[in-house]
Amino acid sequence: MVGAFEVRVLVTGSRGQLGREIVELLGAAPHHDVLALDLDELDISDRERVLQVCGEWEPDLIINTAAFTAVDACEEKVDQAFAVNALGPRHLAEGARHGGAHLVHISTDYVFDGKSPVPYVEWDRTGPLSVYGRSKLGGETEVLSLATGATVVRTSWLCGRHGTNMVKTVLRLAEEGRALRFVDDQHGCPTFADDLAAMVVHLGISRLPGIFHVTNQGPTTWYGFARDVLDAAGLGPGRVEAIKTGDLVPPRPAPRPANSVLDNAALRLLGVPLLADYHEPLERTVRYLLSSS
Image (cartoon, rainbow, N blue to C red; front, top):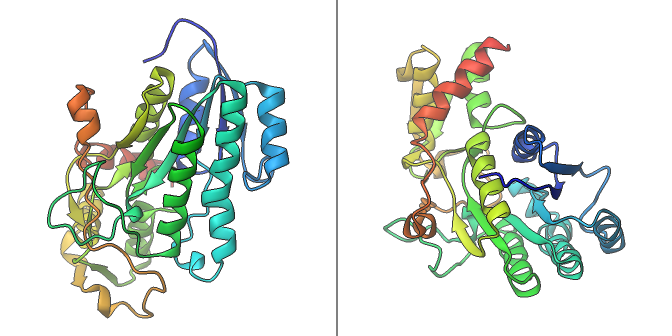
C-alpha cells in the first residue's frame, strides 16, 4: 500500500478515533511526512486558516477525519453542524485544488434514510433523516464538486481503541453492573478504526476517486453487537435485553436510519480486498481494552 517515495500528508481531526489510527499508521511508514492537526490547531470551518495551512504545508494528500459527530446535538446546533461538516470540507477541497493535493473525506451511513430492504451501494439515492446526515451529505457534495478526483469514504458504527464508542460503553456498563438494553431494530456494520485507517490510507495514496463504502463485514443490530462484545470479553451475552427504538428513554432527538448496512460494492468491483468480518477486530480490540484497563 505504501509507495517508495515521500508523501506529505495533512490529517485533520488527528486526535479522534480514526485520526489517531491514521496518524499512527502513517508514522510507521518511513516515506511519509505527516502534519497531524486537531480542532485546537485547525478548525476546518475557518477558511483562512485552512488555506493558510494548505499553502504553507503543501501536502500531497489531505485526509479529513474532522467532523461534528454529536448526532443529537446537531439537531440543536444546526449552524455549527453545517459549518464543520459541510463548509469545512469545502475549504479543504479549495485548499486541495489550489495545491494539487488529493483529498480523502470521511462520511457516514447517515446520508441514507434507512428504508431500503437491502444494503446500500455507493450509487443509491441518499435521503438523510437528521441534521447530522444532511450536513455530512453537504460535505460530500462540496468535496466531489470542488476537488478533482477526490475520495469520499462512507463508513458506519465506528469503534476501536480510542475515544468513546460502543465497545467501551458495553464493557463499562457491564463492569458497573448496569442494565444492558440495546435496540434490535437498527441494522448496520460495525467498523473498527484501525482496519478503516489502513483502507483510508490505501485509497489516499492510490488516489482512487469517487465514493467508497468501507466497513468491516457482517451486519448486525446494536443488541446483537452488544452481545458480541460481552462474548468477546468472556462475559454472559444473555445479560443484554433487546428493545425497540421507540422504547428508548429519553427518546433520541435525531432519527436514526433503521437499515444503514453499507455494501462495499465499489471496492469489491475494483478487486480491492474488503475489511475482515467485524468479529475479528472486535476480539482484538476487547483484548487490548481489557489488558490496558
